[in-house]
Amino acid sequence: MPCLKCQRVWQARSVSSDRYLIGILLGAAAVGYYSPGYSLGGAIGMLYAPFVIFLPPVVSKYRDERNIDDVSKVLEYSRVKRYN
Image 1 (tube, rainbow, N blue to C red):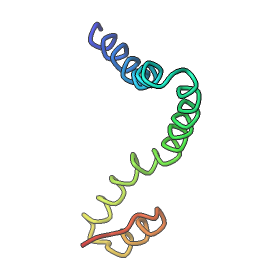
Image 2 (image 1 turned 180 degrees about the vertical axis):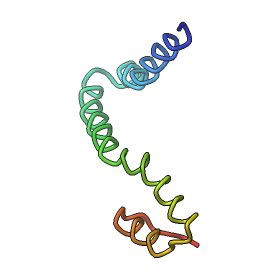
Image 3 (image 1 turned 120 degrees about the vertical axis):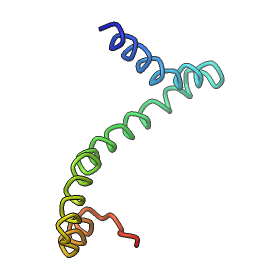
């Protein structure tokens, strides 16, 4: 699976390239300030990831079944605003 290996290498480079660029332009201290914030952002992203993955199929199912009240409830509980 050479393609999978290339993808992993590319992903590792793209994830850390911002730190290298900050290090070159602003120095090691700036990287030290940036890294914890970047890690915190990733942790917050992991908290809402289940909504991004599981919410669209649930909402689509209710919408296909014409259960607009259920769609509204799911979106309200997930704090996603519905725009018509």
